[in-house]
Length: 126
Image 1 (cartoon, rainbow, N blue to C red):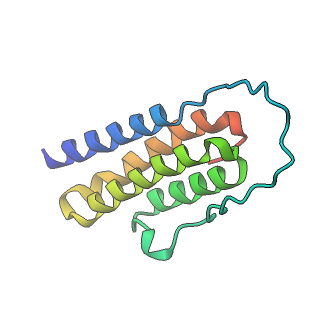
Image 2 (tube, rainbow, N blue to C red):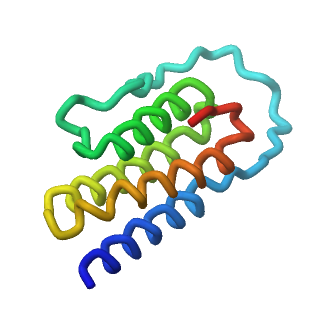
């Protein structure tokens, strides 16, 4: 029963990730600005302590992080980063529990497949 709950939680987080990642088109009628951005760049890879310990999950998270950092426009990057950090935290907790860890690889593979479709508009590869 715990495996079913863990898988269901992973699927819920995957769907939340997809919902949060919806892109919106905005029109800016203002004149272009000549000011330079002072935003701090987002790191391309998480720290070693942020790894899940499940290869399918770690590979997916690394690919997603690279996509966000390298291909998602800066204006939308924060929402993608927040969503993947929530997913990372959830998966990390699931990986710590021996009863839920075994179902995590399948959930991560499914999330990668969904992201492959979702992030195609940014020319990301997974």
